[in-house]
Image (cartoon, rainbow, N blue to C red; front, side, top):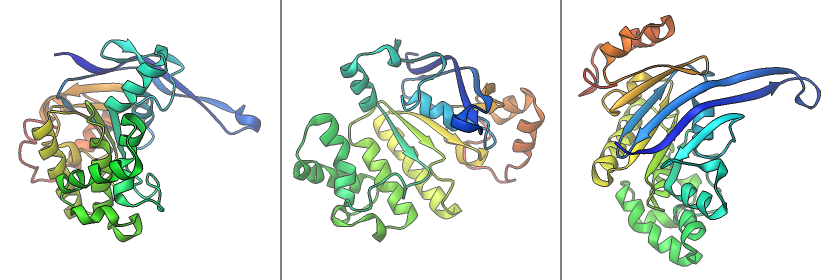
Length: 268
């Protein structure tokens, strides 16, 4: 299977505390290798602070790794020219956890969804907003919702707006970074059903980052478990993941509900 996006021996360091951030040097990503193939849904799970969101930002080109490479179809995105990097940014979209913080409250939903169309296709503001309306319908909202501002949407509805925005430039892969963790269980289930439908219809690749195994259960083809800045295990099933070992992983597996979502016994 052709790899769309790959992390190759990726390291990332941060400075914590001290004047001008000259304090303790934290090794957040420690030689991470992760490959996402065409049409694959890969889960990335682990406790808060394990480095999974940092890896997501590095894969998206939002943070440069201190060592290693990020490859988009075999080419290092950090060694690309401006045009190549723009093509990559169009191909790799993201849906964040903090939907309120990831949208401009002064823009309508139509303008929010149309923003990538203006940036990547050069459409006018009006043209992009009109193109956004069918995208809103595809994610279960109304065409008329394009005239509403973020304050008039619920959390789940605004997350749908953000998913429509990610779909707008016709990407090859979408990274969902804790995209449903702030929603209640009922709304979570509805958003996850939407994600499944989008994947079935469009054949997109997904990287679904979460601290909750229940979120990726039944959704992903494979799940990578991250602990302490490394990929500690990557498997297709819960049973195989459990055998890969580690006290933290076993504790997370024990927290799974007795009634798993459909397909979860085969896939996590």
